Length: 466
Image (cartoon, rainbow, N blue to C red; front, side):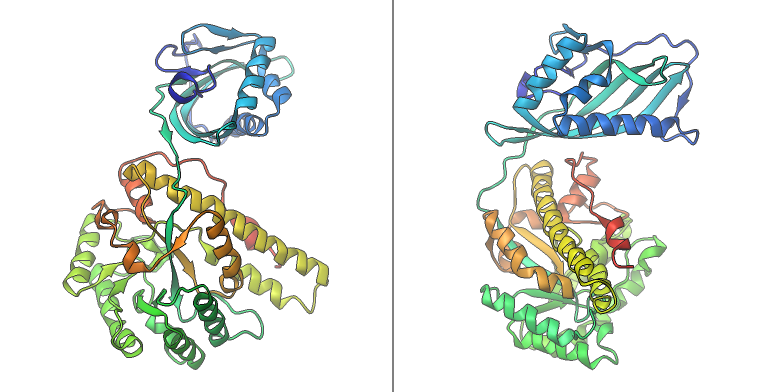
């Protein structure tokens, strides 16, 4: 942990000044998540360390160290013993807010001695100014197990630290909202129709002066579904635009979970969607393409082949910069709504209140992450495209989401305006197994470290209102 240009915590940064060396005799290297449970013990210790720092629990932080535990300052001097460590933590927690993640690579254990080595990612917020800075590097923590069988830190060092990246966000960002999986995204709550959702969604967008918003269509969802056909007609007649999301929503990877197609069949699936787009869009520009699952190909060959087809046929790729997987809340919402008559009203209300709260909290967290990724990957922010889905729950939450974006200073713009920015012409030209937003693709292809971020609440969503 170090502060901006030698200020970071004023301690702990070990830029090659100290490499922990412990004479453990014949060492035994094991994965940090070993099957004998040792890995879990140290994973819990790492998590506890980061949590105590984040929550400014100084007593707990000090208790993690042996009475004669040591820090090494950047100038090579040592912070030694509980009293000095306490004073250090008091200074740290008064000056900074920390969001730290450890990524352990190797765990060495022999008897009552252990050394944990890996990398870390941390965003520090200077409390006086609100400035956020990303730090990355390596760490080594040396432990001793006492007679009560507690592992305590003997020495700790950050080693091989990287450059600090100031995450200064633009106070006046720009965003275009887009919606995937038209005309039928996710399950419906009881009594709802696709047409009703489309009517509500288009009315809200029009009320916010967002005519021309793009929705990306899977033509297969129209087959034998007059409600879906009506919904798509409402979307277009309401002044919104449509683009292609392929006919059947296949993946462009070898992962079976995504129901992938070989690249030739994938291209045919794109072509098969065109008559639907022509029928509904008429003279409007429907030559925008959004990759299902944001997968642009897990090999360079796939990526290049599909892009070649798209560009030769006049398509533009509707890249994404902001995505918090909004669709994940809809299944739980539909289940809770279906239980409204059978379960206690208060319990259902509490569940839906939590859904709303967690949806907005996750949106806020991952909007910031997407913007910070742009700074790391490109050196600056770019105008944004947000990926949403035309589900019942996102339709319900859209007014609150728009308010959240406005609170963060966002101005709303159209897809064509946003993607005219030169950053959208950049291509990592890499095979990526799971795809992602445009910043994700550059982060992964360049092996850049992501800022720490709170995990999405998928487990709770999966089990809510069973």
